[in-house]
Image (cartoon, rainbow, N blue to C red; front, side):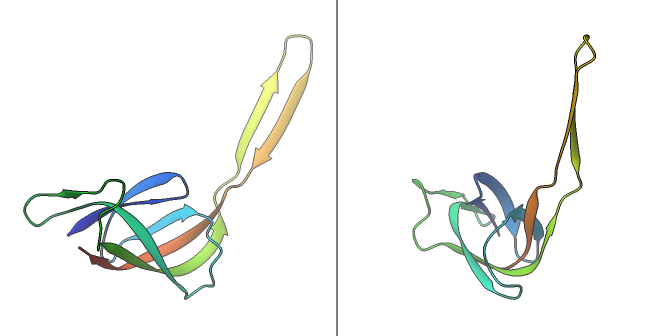
Amino acid sequence: MYAVIRTGGKQYRVTEGDRLKVEKVEAEVGGKLTFDVLLVGGEGEAKVGRPVVEGAAVEGEVVSHGKHKKVINFRKKKEGWTKKRGHRQPFTEVRITAVRA
């Protein structure tokens, strides 16, 4: 069984046992999270929510917090003007423990 969840402005297709990096969530390492379910499928026809599927839930456990690799933004103009900026996006790594329909 799989589900589509929404967190941090993005959507993810998950099954039980998956590990994924989502936008940073304020939770302790080892803590439990519950996500809204937009779609559930895998057994017969898929159930689509409006906007969420009633009675469905995806549970996860926080594995770690961290930052992605640095992304460099470099701008250069013909007149000799340059600007360099870096950014590291924080994330939370989550292990999906249960998908309930």
